Amino acid sequence: MRVGEISREEFVTGSLSCAGCASLLAVRLTLKVLGSRTVCIVPAGCMSTVNCYFPQIPFRVPFFVAPFAATGAILQGVSAGFTYRGIKDINVLAIAGDGATADIGMSSFSQAIISKYKFIYLCVDNQAYMNTGVQSSSTTPYGAITTTTPAPETVEDSTRKDLFNIAVAHNIGYAATASPSYPSDFVEKVRKAASINGPSFIHVLIPCPPGWGFPTEKTVEIGRLAVESGMWNLREYQDGRVRYTYIPPKRIPVTEYLSSQNRFRRIKAEQMACLQGTVDEHITAGGGKSLSQ
Image 1: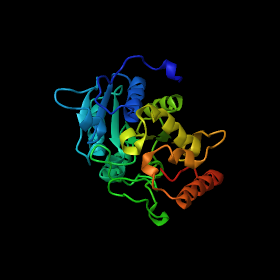
Image 2: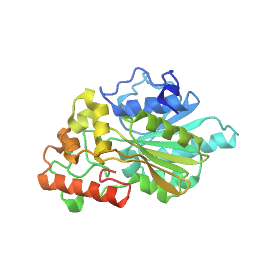
Image 3: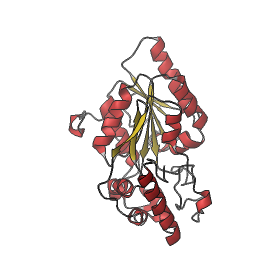
Image 4: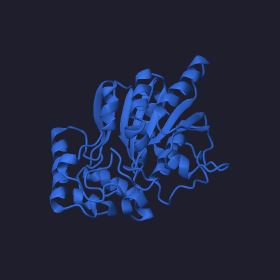
């Protein structure tokens, strides 16, 4: 599917999101693919707490604000209800951040996949708890500054939860990593996720201007720098195999990505070298993951 083939109708309008919000771009693209017969389950996070002030809501599809830890549980319940009633043409979509997926909602996320009900879980990962003050999460990358990690950490403390491989380990029907900076790739992955008769998961990198520290007009560019440097890889899992959906023809240095954001302002030269070495090692070995995932 080419981007030009998706609906011109807007299902998110009048948003109060920050200027340059990549989450909003990802959700707009997703709903253009899925259409009006979609039910959104959204826990605490920028998509709900920033956008939804009674009676204002930017979504033009049914929208349920979930408790922080309960996204997966509500996904199961809503999908089970439609299944029980024999309704098969409605998309059940979670839009959850890294905190609600990798941290507070991890057990609910895991159980939802095991349940085998049909849904799409979209993790919009801006790599910290942004709407509560930029606190570190378990997807915050090595070397990034947050309000709870003011100094770059050591290599020993750099392990991050790899949500893509966690989903794959559950034998999920479809899993992918994506970026709204590559809209054709993104749209195709949403389409594939919607075709699965069971759980599907898309882990989306979401550049955040206020949390990462870059000008609002640079959002798409920052997303592309992440992929072109190897700090974020575009992959998918289906039918028992993982493949890259895009490989940069010539990777740019990791330093070009890091220097574009204020959150990496205190990173040291040896830490930059460590990140570059990790990216090079994973690409050479065909491991298909990056330190930021």
